[in-house]
Image 1: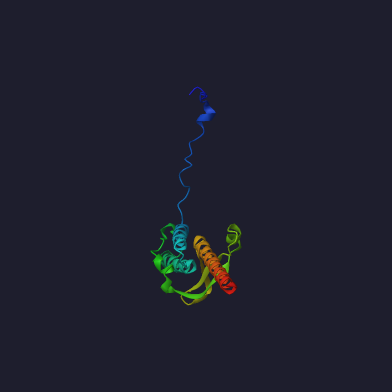
Image 2: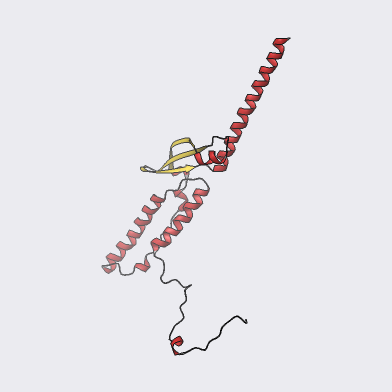
Length: 180
């Protein structure tokens, strides 16, 4: 309390007005609200290692917004109330449901970064490519969790080591029996 400096207000100070910086300056548009919701659902699908058809969701959104705009154009002759454009109710599950996707390619890709971080391991990450519905132009890729790939690489290295040890023990036993 002793470090605070108090000074009397003069006329110039009274001319300033308080500005609330926490209050948003404008409301979000329907596209901005949709984009936020789209990214949250895409993030959830990615965490579950499912493909998410964001392009199809955007196309469906644009079609619904176009219907609302056309209704306003028909009624008013112009887009009179853009704030009345509502974010349509979307079935978000259909954009990440594997029934709607076609698996086109599934393979393993060498991951240099994970291999460098885990010396002695050759880490291969599983990758799957999907198409949404009949649209072949958009590919959706899903990668395996890095921890799972490292675990698989460790198990592979351990089994190879165990096989090598068993083989060398077998050779040693055969040499011993030959000497007798």
